[in-house]
Image 1 (cartoon, rainbow, N blue to C red):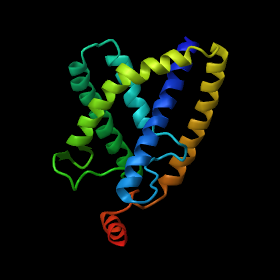
Image 2: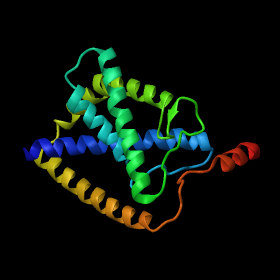
Image 3: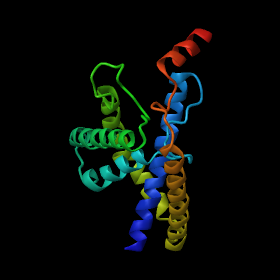
Image 4: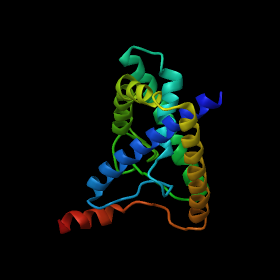
Length: 188
């Protein structure tokens, strides 16, 4: 049981890192400056790890890419909406806002990102996860367990410190404003 939990936690952290990398690249290009989109200080976005693990647990046995696409859209969009709502209620801050886009819901989810998550979920389940599973089983169980324990301690401390740091702030948006983005475009 411990081995399985350690294995899944390591996968969770890998997917959280991949999500962080994806967000850092796309948002930094979009804002034309480095942007830390995450709530945490470390190089991981747990919302991606949660989405990836939920995909694995719920959709991992499905072979049909169309079913994966449709079901993963429901799963990942639900996670994105709930996470946005909870972060906003807990910390009075938004880590993403799609309000200026067409086909969005309360600024929390957006049709095009939802479709992208569906495509990324197929990529995860059909290509990325089989590769990760193949390579993670090369490591001895003890190594995976110690790695998972160390990652968990770092992740948990980051979560505590980040929550403490954010709780007293009055800021609402954590990313460059539309005005700042426009100024960056004019300067370029």
